[in-house]
Image 1 (spheres, rainbow, N blue to C red):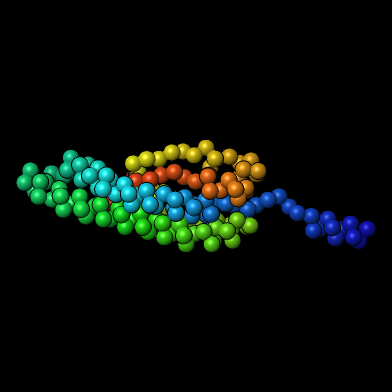
Image 2 (spheres, rainbow, N blue to C red; image 1 turned 90 degrees about the vertical axis):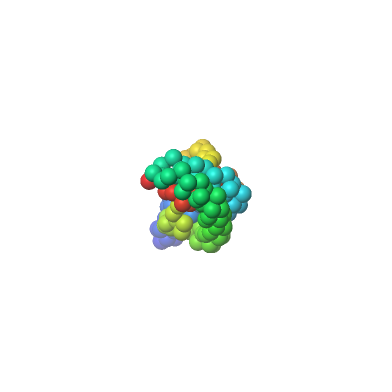
Length: 156
């Protein structure tokens, strides 16, 4: 009887692990290089959008278009590098937090808030089936696909 009570006390409870930090880290590692590659296109996109919204003379608009494109391209390229780095930094806590119900806030918030050239709502993210949600083989495929992020303009 005592053994039965001890075994009952050691019975596993419901799974409470969360793979969200690990998935976010993997997604940032995989999508960061695409942000870097798409930074010239996002730079042109941002310059064109800003030229429509500013109220300067045509000379000023023309004079700042090319340097502005270069600046925005480098900022977005650097943002892609930081995204890749923060993804790498989130992998170790993601593996550790996979076994607990805790989660970590994003290290690099613009990924969540900024607009992107390409976004895809991955259906694997919302699957709550434990065989999918907690499966370490599925985690690399259950990422938020968002690339070509505009790091200079959040979309709040």
